[in-house]
Length: 518
Image (tube, rainbow, N blue to C red; front, side, top):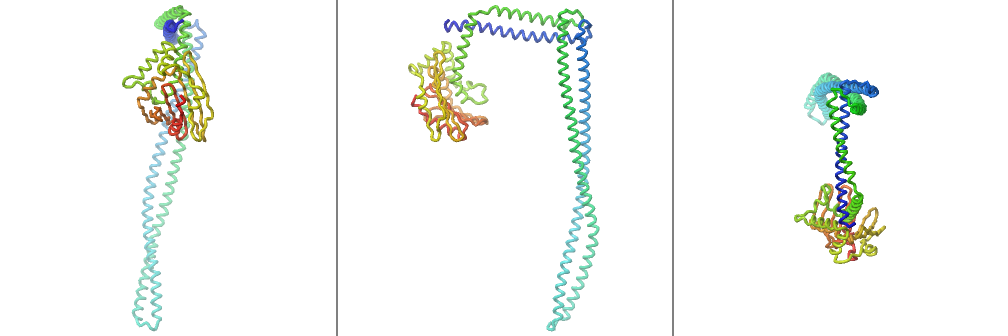
């Protein structure tokens, strides 16, 4: 069968399958409606107290479930009431203790204000006593000096010295009297200070007690409320479970009533809905049977071949192109390809041309690749790829794996190498797109766009290394730096690292690539 015939016959099978899938979806929807109508019929029969003596087992099961649900709903109301009462109690106690704290704080501020006033008076009195005491010491020194002069026969001013001693004696008496008066006046102040200090301490303890009581109360009430919430949650789960079982029993009852074609006038509306849903299901089932009869072995075989061709082609395109699309596409972009349109739609045209080549088979892609490369294409050898690997001081490749891939007329080759130095690793991947190199055509437009993105998640741009266009990217979340290079519209080189030097290190590696080997 030719490539064209495969797609023609395969598309017929695809159309049949698509129609079958759509009709199957319709059937499932109708099935859900029918199920819901059966449940509604059974529920209506139960709520209308229809005679269910013919279905004693279902009647008993529904009766037990109804009692269970009534008990659970009653318990739920009780728990809700307890929770509301507990929340109200917590609020009342919090307000009461808060008011007590406010009152204690106001009384404490007032007491401390009066205490500070009395302390100021006490300090002023003690300062006056200190000044008087200092003067008494000075008077004693002055008296000693004057008495020494009186005893000296050479001193003539005896009368003046006597007057000086008399004045000092008078001042000393006044100071002693003043000190005694200040000490007496300070006694009630000191007593008041002691009382106020005691009151302030008592109020502080009262305030701390109220705060402690409030904290304890809040913890206990929060624990009680949390327990009630947990019980409400568990009760809700049991209620939903019982309701689910009840709905299942309603459906079973509805199925039996529908099968018996019950004629109770209270159920006429629900019975008509069930019959209508069943008729719609039968109509859709007839459509499914018709589509199944249209199945043709030849078309099924062609469809499988067509899907193999399409899936294989997509896989190959992804293997070669997706690396650079990921490098250049912003993280939040709806689609990596969305940024390739350009003002003239160049990339879009290239992709359309590739789609046309795909319709011609992989031979069309090979032919286009050879046309672009100027003749027959021989894959790069393992030796050539190893020689092209970068040689960077202090870095040695730990391994270098060479592979070739063949899919129909399309042939590719690749070399994967890892470099290690210290705790850092650099990965180098070189792919020779070979006879699939035409698939790289859209990437020309990518590099011509001169993209640059610098967001919280990613930094990326297009630049050049040794005159060759490159795509640079740093993922700021996982700190991975990447380089993408397309050389001679055929060779795809990708470099990656999580080393701290990031792009600078990759630029150093890219500059050491020996692309002349290709």
